[in-house]
Amino acid sequence: MQEKKEEDLQQALNKVSEVGIDEVGKGSVFGPVFSAVIVLSEKSKIILKQFGVMDSKKLTPKKRKLLLPEILLHSSDYGIGQSSVREIDKLGIRAATELSMIRALKKLKAKPPLILVDGPLFLRPWQGIQKNIVSGDSKFISIASASIVAKVSRDALMERLEKKYTGYSIFKNKGYGTKEHLLNIKEKGLTPLHRKSFLKKSNLI
Image (cartoon, rainbow, N blue to C red):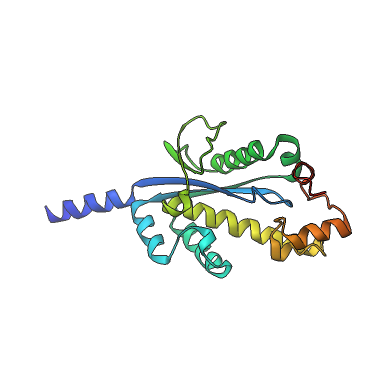
């Protein structure tokens, strides 16, 4: 009887309980937008919480990098998607972000029965059940994990692009429109990876 209870508990712990999705780079002025989706079991949620998984914005870059392999190891499945600057300029940031999320979801082995989407905006192209969670990365481990995976993946790309597009402090600002970055744009002009639509709309160029 005790063995049966333990077996049932293990099955419950191994059962997929959460599928969270988040994006990063939406408000950036340079580079693509990234999204990640993470599938977790109850057991994985407990383990990752013990490792210190939380909202990526509350973690140091070093801690995020250390957590990345643990998240990928303990997740039942995951997917990473992105949308290019060209797509952002052509479709607008919301549609391009949705496209990156759909690309991440399509990389999963199976379609999830429910996805938890960070933020108040409905994922319009998704033909499945979804739930919007405002500040989801501080409420659900799966969304927090997704935010870390998306952030570390995008930051790694920004570090590589710094070598190609020098003089814009991309390594430091990660493509966001800091005062220094905007000053660099005025001095050096735009690169092919600057979001022209966003910069023009915000009267930054």
